[in-house]
Amino acid sequence: MLHRTLTLILFSSSILGSHGHGQSAFPIFVKTLKGTVNLEVNSDETLSQIRRTLVDDGDLPSCGGKRWSRFSLCGGTLREDIPIHRLKRITPDAILELLPIQRGGMQLFVKTLDGKTVTV
Picture (cartoon, rainbow, N blue to C red):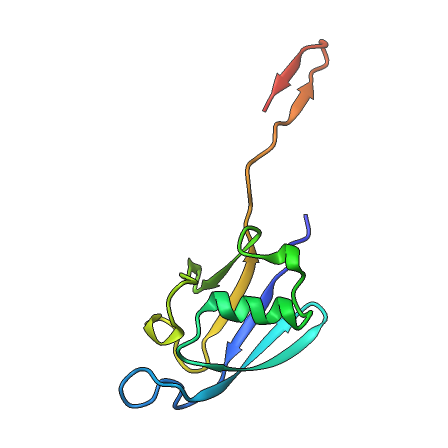
């Protein structure tokens, strides 16, 4: 199965300002299968708003919404409903990934040499 991954790369030495939050804009580079997208975002924006921007600009298919993918950093899923400055694990130069959500499973049936079918 082909896994599609979008990688967000945050670049800034002063994204969050001196108090840990602020309205200053900073660049986010989104690496997709089609290329790299540059977005200007504020630290008060949420990952949901960034996802919406990617969809509106045509850089992410509308079917690639929250139902089908999740933001991840260092293997952990990030909350999308709170501002970036409150996500303590996001630091300058952090790399975020937008990963597909693996839903459900599948059954595998194997037919043995003696004609029996076994579910794996």
